[in-house]
Length: 457
Image 1 (cartoon, rainbow, N blue to C red):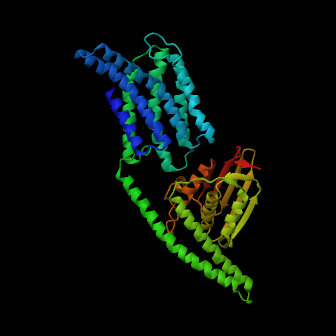
Image 2 (image 1 turned 180 degrees about the vertical axis):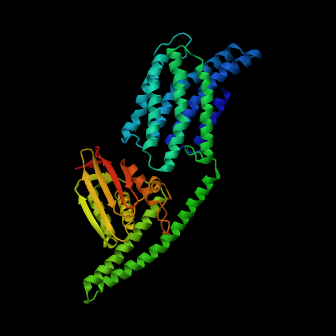
C-alpha cells in the first residue's frame, strides 16, 4: 500500500501546485489525499509498526502515537473519501448549484451524516459503524458517479467531453470498487480484507491519469510540450490582435469622420440614396468596432454583468447591425415574447451577432433567415434558422471547439465565435444546441430557464 500512498499524494500535490485556485482541482486533490490516508493507515499497521517492534524501538508512548495515527488515517479515508468525491462531482458538473446561498450550505448539509458517524456505536474490533456509514456513503459515491457521467453526456464541446470522459474513467471504477470493498462487504458479509485489492484498481486509476496527462491533460495537469506550444500560440494571437486593434481603430475613426462629413453635406441630387449609402458605411464601421470587442473578449475569461433586459430588443438590434447583409435574404421574424430576462447585455448581443453573422455567411447567394423568440411555461426559447449550406455530422460535432472553423478560406476567421457563444450561454445557465444537415441549413436553439431571477414577464 506504500505505492498507493505515494501515488495518490503525489497526484494531489501536483494538482494543487498546477491550479490551486480552481475548486474542482482542490476537491479532486482532496480525494487523492483522503484515499492516500487509507494507504497510510495500512502502511502503519502492516509495515512500520512491525518493523519498529522488530527493532525493539516500540515503547509505550510510540505505540500509542502510532496507533492513534493509524486510527485517524483510517477514519479520514472512510469518512472523507465519499464526501470529497461527491463534492468534486457536484462542482465539476457544468450546471453547478445556481444560487450562491445553496452552494454555501450544500457542503455543510452533506457533512451532517459524516459527523453522525462519530456518534453511532460500532462493533468491537470494527474501525467504523459499517452499516450506518454505508447508508450515506453509497448514495454519495453512486450520486457522484452519476453526476460525472451526466456531465460527460451533456457536454457539447468535443475537447471538454474527452476530458470529462477521462475524468469519469479515472474516478468511477475506483470509487465504485472501494464502495464494495470498504463498506458493503465488511458491513453486510463480514469480509474485511478485500480492501487490499484496492491497490490494483488504484494502479489502473494512476495509469489513466498519467497517460491522459501526457496526451490530453487531466484536471489542468499537462505533462507535454503541447501545453507550451498552445500557450505560445495564444500569446501570439493576443499580441497580433493588439496590433490589429490599433490599426483598425485608426481606420474606423477616419471612416466615421468622413462618413459624418458626407452625410452633413449631402446635396439635393438623390440625397436619400446618398444618405442610405453613408449609413451602410457607418454600420460597417460599427461592425468593425464590434469585431474588435469580440476579439478582445474572447482572449479573456467571461465575466457577466447582469441586468434586466429584453431579448427581443437585443435581437432587433443585432438584425439592424446586419441590415446591409440582409438585402438579398428573406427575413422572417417571430418575436412573440416581449418580457425580460436577467443577463449580460454586451455578451448576449455578441452571441446573437455571432450566430446571425454565421447564418448570413452560410447564404452567400441569398436565402431565408428565420428568427423566433417564444415563451413556454418553463423556458424562453430563441431559434435562428438559415437555409444555407448546412454542416455534416463531423463538422457539427466540433463546432463548439475553440479554433475550429468551417470557413477556412477566410483569413480573419479564428474559429472562436461559436465556442465563445456556447461559453456565454452556459454562464447564463442556459442551453445551446445546433441542428444541421448538408444542404438543409442550420438551426441554432438557445433556451433560458424561467427560474426566479432568470426570466420574468
